[in-house]
Image (cartoon, rainbow, N blue to C red; front, side, top):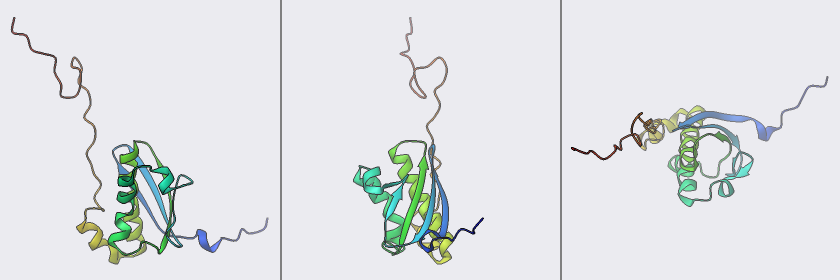
Length: 138
């Protein structure tokens, strides 16, 4: 078999895994001009809410890498906001894997910390996690 030649554009400069709620994002940092691809679609098409797109680009803005890299992201699980948070966490980790000098700025803005808040489970005999049925004294 002939040896496969790797395309120069597909070499990963950094890689990071981000998590938020039940969403998991794998982020690949590549040389490019600032395109963000999520599950094969452009970020603006994947996330229709501008807040999620803003959240996605925060680590790049903080480290002044907005138009230096292309990002290829595979994300699954959770909802829109959870997936955007997972992508942000993964991008921050990928930037640190590429260059350790990015870590203090990302840590100061809280992008390196996994947001550990999860949905509380529903308790048996009750309508929800915290909600109780109305108490009747008699």
